[in-house]
Length: 318
Image 1 (tube, rainbow, N blue to C red):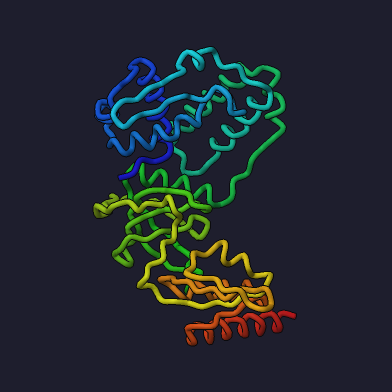
Image 2 (cartoon, rainbow, N blue to C red):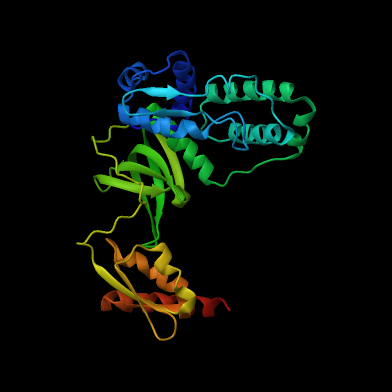
């Protein structure tokens, strides 16, 4: 089960203290001490060099590993007491207050955050004044994120109503969450009890969510490598051909494709593969006069019907 964001943050804060006291620590020993795999530890070590005592990029943690041992090259440089500039104190205080309002946040974590915020306000002095005049409002996705994070932490099942743009419908389902991740948008990977398969849910498409008392027990699955993006078309996926005008050339930049041939009018003839061709109907509607689906014929006809229905609905309201 993947750790949630709060647990990972706690671990990384402890890891800094642990490594400071053990120069040259062995990867295997550190992983065992924290109860994680070596791959998880290496992932944490990839993040730590982006952390430090300044938001401006200075005084970052110079930590690296050769796969066997871990070396921290500048522990003394970042040991000085933290001195926050006014803009840094403001950013921290605004963010802390915003996170404390998230629904679904564990009460113990909320109380700890509020105590830390109070200490930061006292330390910042006059610099804290500006933060009281600023606020951040999270989109509805924030509440969904908090519920999913809590479900992962407490190993509980979730019920949700989810919008599927490919079918243009809301479905109700129970899922066992596996992990949260972000690739452009924020997603939950989970075992779906409706389809009895692993599914990925975009959080901003969750219309309603509820934490259940049932324990979450997803089957053991190998986590997908997301380093190259969320979608990995397969050679076995159906082929779709789309023609776009000059204003639709952006499609070739955003959609993985097999080929993009230049057209005389400055447009492109794009050949791509997708496991769900029906999902491209929305792309055709978005392109309007700047694009059309050429093949397969049944998908082209479906896109035309969807466009006609949209126009008819618009005319009825006019």
